[in-house]
Structure formats: C-alpha cells, structure tokens
Image (cartoon, rainbow, N blue to C red; front, top):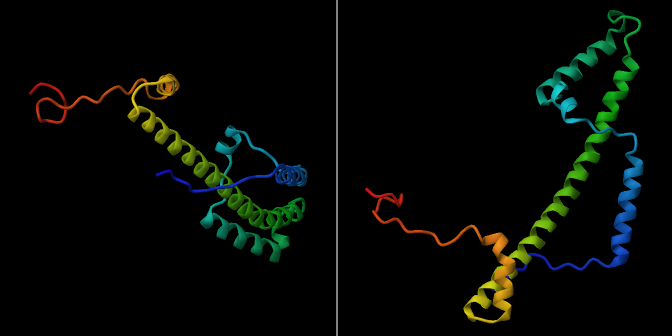
Length: 162
C-alpha cells in the first residue's frame, strides 16, 4: 500500500504570493546581520542563566547611572535589549514556518520514495521486461554497492570462521 502523508497542489498564483511575501520579508530584514562561522564561534552567548544576570545587572545600572563612566553607551544597551525582545517573537514564528516547510518537504519526499520502492518491487515481481531493465539501470547508483547480504557461516554472527 502506498504511503500518502500529504497531498498538496500549489497553484502558480499561490507560489507567486509566497515568493512576494518572502521578498517583502527579506526587505524588512535587510538590516539584520549574518555572522560568519568564526564570528559565531568567538561570540559570548546569551543563555538562560546569563540572560537573568544581564537583565538584573542592566536594571541596577539604570538605577545607578552615576556609577558608570560618563561615556558608557547606556542608550545603546537599552536599544539592544529592546531589539532582542522584539526579534524573539519574530524568530519563533519564522522557526514554526521553517518547521512546516521542512516537514512538508520530508513528507513529500518520503511519499515519493515509498512509491518508487513499491514500483520497483512490482517491476521485480513481474520478472523481465523493458521497465525492469530501465529501473535496474536507474537504481544501480543508489543500490549498486549493497549487493546481497551474506549470512554468517559459523553461528557467531560475524561471518568469520570460528
């Protein structure tokens, strides 16, 4: 029996609308940055515990501005904190959308793969013919190195002589 996790048809108008929405989103995120692998590696990371420390420390700093040097960029720090709080719900929604797209892609791919395996199985069961020859030629790059599995000859499960 064929697997059918998803049946979906995406009309050309819908693809255009999705593309336009993504283009608009990219335009709205044009001042967001992309870090290099090296930059990601070198940055100190804000985790759950360090975030509590940061927020509490910033709160104390805001209540005691005289304890900071006059040139300390407190306005910039406040702006970063506010932007972080704004980016997080956006990121959460984007992750949900990415998960939907990834799961849809995976389900479609799985449906196709299962159908191809079933078709190949039917062709093999039918014996010989042009379809089987063509399928074998197509399947060879994917399955060619697997060969038949040898059964162990000595009962040890290793296939080596005892």
